[in-house]
Image (cartoon, rainbow, N blue to C red):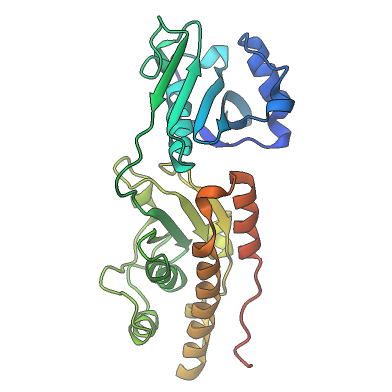
Length: 298
C-alpha cells in the first residue's frame, strides 16, 4: 500500500475526460455533467488521476456527488480526504446543509453516510466567529519581502486575514531595514522572524487558505504538501535586500517593494472571496500578481 499523500486541486477542463472515465468505471452517472456543472476536485498522484468528487450547489444546500477512487487505490483513505476537502469548501461557501445520495457507502464515507442510508443530510453549523484566512508568503530567505507582506496583510486584513511568512532557505534573521520601515509605518513587528517553510507543512501546522510566492526562485521550488490545500499564485517582487549601493538606494528599494506589496494586498483583501467561485478567484489572484511595480520617480 502506498503511503504518499495525493495532490488535491480544483478540476480544470483538461481533467473532464479522465473524470468521466473514472466515474463510468465506478458505475456513477455522467450524462448530466455538462448540464449540471458540478464543482469537481481531483486527486492526482504523479500524473495519474486517482480520485474525483464534486459539490453541486443550490444556494445554501450542496449535493455531495460523483465521489470516486480508482479501483487500485480504494481503502487507503483517499475518499475520506476528498470528502473532508469538499466539506471544507462547502463551509467556506457558506453552505449550511450537505446532502449525499447513495445506495451503499464504503468505509471511507461511513462517517458521513452509514451503509443503511440512501439519502443522508448533514448540517454544517456556521461558527460564531469564523477563523481568519491564513495567508502564507514565500521567499527564498524570508528576511525582507515576505516579512513586509506578512505584516501588511495582518494590518489590511482587519481580522479577516492572518499573515504568515517563510523561506525555502531562510536566512535566520529579518533584515533590519524591513523592521525599521514597518516601525515607521506603525505596522506590527513583534512576532516577525525568519523561518523555514517546513514549519507550515508539518502535521500540526495551521491550515493554509492562500500561498503566494514573491520571488522566482521560491516559485520554481517543489512545494511541500500544504495542509488545507490552499490556493496559490506568484506575486513576484524584486528583492530589496539584494540592492547594493548607498543607504538611500537601499531604503528606496525597500519602499518600492513595500508599495508594490501594499497595493496588491489591499486589492486582495477587498475581494468578496466567499462569493467568488474558485476558478474566477484564481484569475483574480493571477491578475494581481501581474500588476506593474509602482513608479517611485513620480
